Image (cartoon, rainbow, N blue to C red):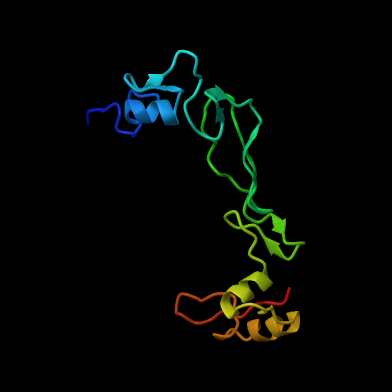
Length: 156
């Protein structure tokens, strides 16, 4: 694949690509529109960790935590881009100990009920779960075995 400086796509061998000469002067003073390399004074061209062609200091928050199971990301001081979005390890307690983090969100029982049943949906009493789950039916179970039968839950 050949690279084309000025097409607004950063390709192999380019530090930046701000488009045409006119677009570059208006949108990205950090990028040389002829070479698609950073200008002599620039440390970076774009991204949340690049401010006026200068890299943000290591540790500056570039993405806030979205919720209690997410983690804030910080600039490295070496790159204009924010690091990959990361979250707390699955299984960390959340929601005031009513849920556990899973893939960056806190799926509490009440939140799951509200998502299924709509606003105001809440979880049933613990006794309901104990009664239904101990029967091993479609209404409450601890999984399905290899023959397709619902497994009864053992008391905790």
